[in-house]
Image: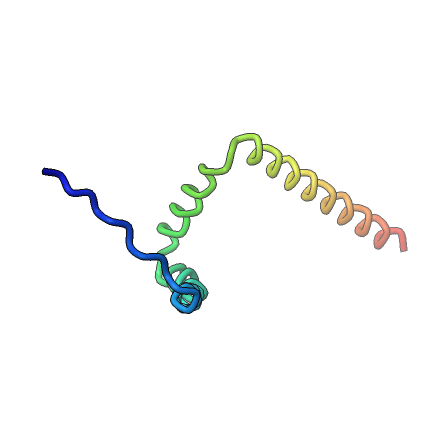
Length: 87
């Protein structure tokens, strides 16, 4: 005969608050420590994997926005150089 497991009793508000604080405490330092202990190859691999989870339309929009920003900066540098040469 198959016995279904029973649900655990709900936690009290004090228990919930304790576990929230505990999770926050570990979460605040966990990511930083993990990132420091990774090699450059491992960081690159994780970043690529995370980027693949972003929908293609969003990636394309971000790439276009970044390209426009680079183009704007380049134009500003040219204007500044031209102005400097004209002095």
